[in-house]
Structures are given as C-alpha cells and as structure tokens.
Amino acid sequence: MTDRSQGSVQPTQAAPNPIDPGVRIGHVHLRTADIDRVRAFYVDVLGFDVVAEARDVPGWGTTGDILFLSAGGYHHHLGFNTWKSKDGGPQPDGVTGLHHVALNYPTRAGLADAARRLQAAGVPLRQLSDHGTHEAIYLSDPDGNDLELAWDRPVEQWPRDAEGHVAMSFGELDLEDLLGSNPSV
Image 1: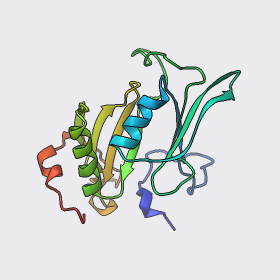
Image 2 (image 1 turned 180 degrees about the vertical axis):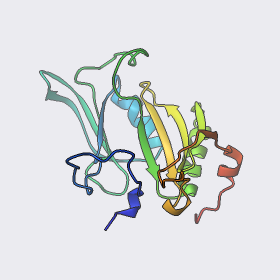
Image 3 (image 1 turned 135 degrees about the vertical axis):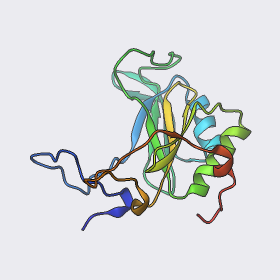
C-alpha cells in the first residue's frame, strides 16, 4: 500500500534496485554561527520546541554549542551546532552543498500562520510560489540557510501530464489569499 501522506508519484525513471518506500527524511542538522541567534528565529518566530541545548560540547575535533528542535515531540527535526562554524559567515553562492530545507505544514492555515509570524518579526520573504503540488514560501534563516515553508495539496489535486506523471508548475503564490485561508483547512 502506498503511503499517501507523503504523496504518490509515478517516477519518470524507476531505480533498478529501489529503496524501501517507507524511508523518510528524519532530521536536518545545520552548522550555525550563533546558537542564540538561530534559537531566537526557529523557536521564538517559527515556534519549534527545544528538545536539547548544550554549550561547549565536544564534537568533530573541537567544542561548540548544540541545539535540537522539534515540532510535535519528535527527537529532533532540526539540529544546529557551532563545531566548525562559530562566528562564521554564510555559505557563498557558487559552491556545492545544500540548496534549501523544506518544512512542510500539515494544513494551509499552518503555512498562513508561519507567514504571519515571519511578517510580524520583519523577516523578508524572498519568493512566494505555487508549484501545483504545493504552495511555498522561500526565505533565509539568520545564517543564510535557505528555507522553503510549504503546504502540500491533497494528492488528488496534483497536476498530472498525459502519462500520469506529476506536472509541477512555478506560478506565483497569492499571499493575501493564503493569509485569508480558513484555519480549519
């Protein structure tokens, strides 16, 4: 049985030896220049819970600060450390590495709440997109890590091509419509 909570797509090319379909991305661990600054953003603005926080923890041949955050009681969805990055600058453009982290909200109203929180905190929203499969708000965290805050439409509403493959789009998200969304959706 397909787990429709994550969506269902017909791949354009199936892997010859496919991974277990139950695999999920459990957490993302990012380097930060300043634990307090990143804590203020992810906890005070976005509303994540602090699961663990420690200072001067040994790791990777040095010591640094760590912060583990969760939404809803998972051991951690986001981890941060300063082991190799304390007081460092953001990753420059033009290098390989992580493009962005997507945080999926279970409801459209939840995404709208996130947009309101960001606006109230004066956080610039870089891009507002409607991808057909999902609505997305793109921004950067205090360390310059790019985030996508998203809400997935029900799978039955995803646009498909003639062969049944997902046909994502790159339209603009109507922020005013999102902000007026019904809290129960």
